[in-house]
Length: 206
Image (tube, rainbow, N blue to C red; front, side, top):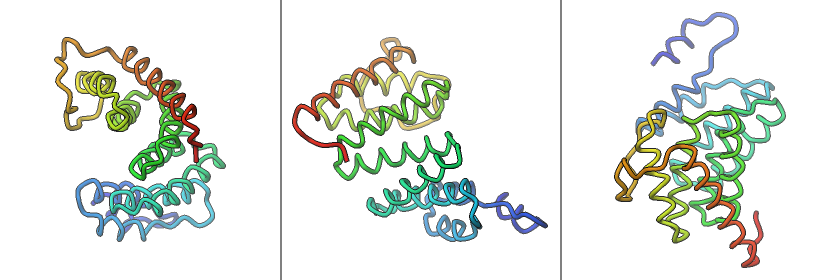
């Protein structure tokens, strides 16, 4: 609503309803999200092109079109990297890893999560890191590593700086949940372990 009001009141350079599109999408209205995404005017600005591609990737990911979502996320990463927009690159990389996970491309998903976990950790961006770790936990369960996944989810459920989300499916009491440093170490060890297993099996990362 605020994005549209700003768009209607603007003179000169127009605002871009990217947040409005994402709000509609996350609020359960993907068609409204598509309508707002069409109002984004990028010109030839690399960052705006990257943001528009990211929004499109999120929409297609929710819609279940993994191939198109991957194309959009990949374009967003490339645009962001060209512009030096490390935050945009990272959030697009999270989406890319998630959609590759859902498409069954485990090796590529693991590599993507490893890189973006390192990025968030280096910058101390724990709000986004918790979201990424929760996504990783879902993949770890599919790799028969529910013990690690449960610990990571319990740490996220306990953390005051983690965005609100559904509790993890594990049954670890808050008193037994690791702290955030321990959760990060568990995630990194799991990523190393499972990537090694994938490589030993002869699966190539794509």
